[in-house]
Length: 588
Image (cartoon, rainbow, N blue to C red; front, side, top):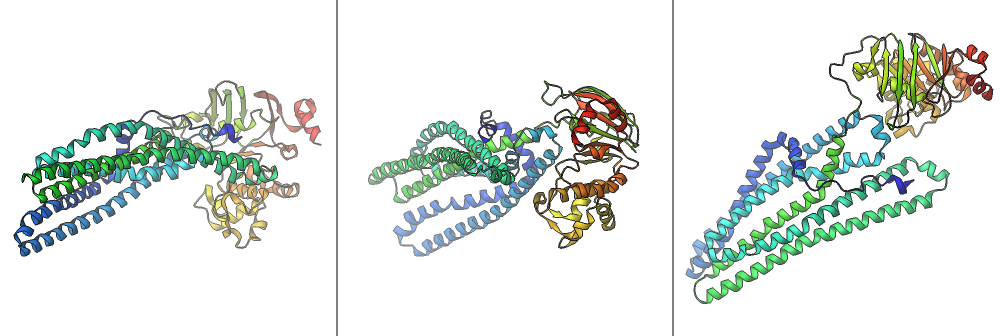
């Protein structure tokens, strides 16, 4: 399973492109004011700190040789004040940037989640959920600092570099030129490292995504793992994925760790050249000791912004792959959406019509082929047939979880592709075979589809579907907290809570897709009265393999080979002694 599943994301994306950063600027513009203030404060802090070598030069060349201690103490006081101002400005800057970073995290994550809510079922069918989760949580955290402190640092360190060069040339032109000789060497070194770093860190992104997806899948499927005694096999697969992460991480770190020693080595060589060249001239009386020390200090400062820019560069290289993944998700097309000019469906009576509908999930093989039928308001329709015949596809198309490729589906004479999704689905009560229970109270779960419902209405819905008895036996009744996925509840209990949730939403069209599959026969008999209450006055579509539950439906459609093989009431189909008859007698 895992050997083939986790090849997604293994292929590297396009090369680094500045358009990703330009696009990310939309998230930065909102906080530009604070970021500009932070930039100004950082610039002031840097400018103050760069005065220090010039003050030290005055002390060494003027105050100390002349024995002017008063002047020396004044210079020391100025030096302390300069460093103090630098610390204050940088502290305020850090707080402003921290706030901007968290705001950017919030905005990106909000946009990602909002977009994910609109994506069609097909998107989630094709991707492991762990890969989606890592983009919303881990990747956003990673890029936020790049989009705030990273961009500020680029501007700031560039200005710092210019300030240092200016101060350095003011002190001594010849020694400043010695420092500048190291720049071409550094440029060649950084260009050599660029692509290797990016590819290495993008590989880390891919391997981490694979590991996260496999981990999430196995946490959800822990029971199945133990049932089939797959622990050892899964442990080996996890170890392989984890080892891939370790190897790619170590490769990426090796490239990153080469940057700092490389810059440091160039810095040491340049400073050695300064002292060598300066001391030779110092012996000839052309350079003072203060000048040599000052330029050496500026040389040290000179490499600091370059090293910081290298660090920011590393950060960009490490995180640009995450930024690509985030925008890739945001750019995922919302294929099921409101058409331009879509109108509200209005009040729904429940007339449903399929007109020559054909549909394919993969674009090649049709699951439904030229399906047509008409349902009057209030009728109950049962869909039966072999697995994979297209029963669930019919109700999914009616709910517009997928769009038809050919034909039309109408409700009360209105093409559902011409109405808004919200107005369409607000009139539908859909209960699937897999009952989803959210973290929160039982009452919250029942009220999920209608938030304005009162506690009494919640309890009435529970009673109508025979859920009230077991809910009241829970520690805090309807206010009992249930864990994620309803793990503290049985499958039957989860389905009854889902029934109550669907009933409370008061839909005009009701869809029950294997909705009683996990409920025992005794409870189902008791539930039948509640089901009759739900079905009364509503158009309903019921998919059930347990045929005894759909005998009283107004019409039964036998679906096979992508079409309607038989249609009629229970008695009519039994009299035909065809597909339905054979299926029903096989269960008797």
